[in-house]
Image 1 (cartoon, one colour):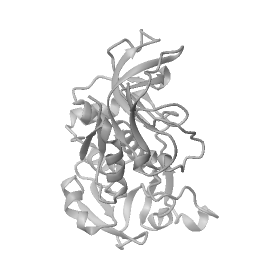
Image 2 (spheres, one colour; image 1 turned 60 degrees about the vertical axis):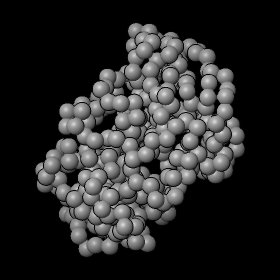
Image 3 (spheres, one colour; image 1 turned 135 degrees about the vertical axis):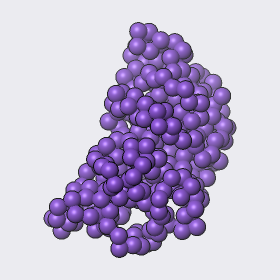
Length: 318
C-alpha cells in the first residue's frame, strides 16, 4: 500500500510518501480501507517531535473515514461497512490514517451511515466531535453570546456552524490574530470578529460562553472576558502551551464564573450519531477549506503551519 511515513522528527519534508506492506489483521483488530482523513495541528506537533511518547518511524493520523476491508468482528463491523475512527492512540502508539489502509482496534472503529461525500465526511471526526462535545459542556441556551477563541481553526469554524445549527439566535464571535481574515470568518458563519493581539482580546465585551481553543496560553485572559454565570471550556492547545504554571483557581476564575473542558479522546458512539444527525438534518456545511491527495500531505502540513490557513484541511485517498 501507499503511505506517508515519518522516519524521524522534522519539518514537512519529514513526511515521506512511499510503498510499504499492507497491515495484516490480528485478533481484536480490523483493516480499514481509508477513503479520506483530516489533518490536525496535533499531528504537526508529533511530526516535530513534541509528543514525547511517540517513537519513530510512525505513520501519523489521529482520524479517518473509510470502509471495513477485513474484519475480526463481522457482526458489528462487516466488510464494506462505512466507518469513522478518531483518537485512541491512533497515529501515536500504533500507525494511523496517513495511508491507503490502517489497522485499528475494533473498539475504536465506529460504524456510521451518512450521505455525505468522503471528503466532507472526513472533515467531521476529530474537528466536529471536539466542537460538538465542547458546546454540549458550555450548555448553550437561546440568545447566548458565544466567543470562539481560535476562530480560524477547523474546530473554531465547526463550533460556529454547530452553534448556529443548535440555535440561530446564538451570537457567535470569532477571534483572529490577523484582522484581514475578518471577512473570511464572517463568510464561514460568525456574526462578529475581534482581534486577538499579543494574547489579549481587543475588546471590553463580556461573553456568556467562551470556547477556548488557544488553551493555557490565553485562558486567564478568556476567563476575564466572561459575563456573570458564564462558562469557559478550555478545549484546545493551539497556543503550544500545555499547562498553567502556579494555577490558583481563586484569583484566576472570577466570582460566579465556571471553567470546564472537553477531551475528544472520550469518544461516545451515541454522541457521534447525534452529531451526524444534527449536521445532516440542519444541512450544516462541513465541506473542508482545502483538499489534497495522499502524496501531498507534506504540502498540507506546510499550509497549516503557514499561519494563512483557515478551516479544515482534508486528504483524499481515492
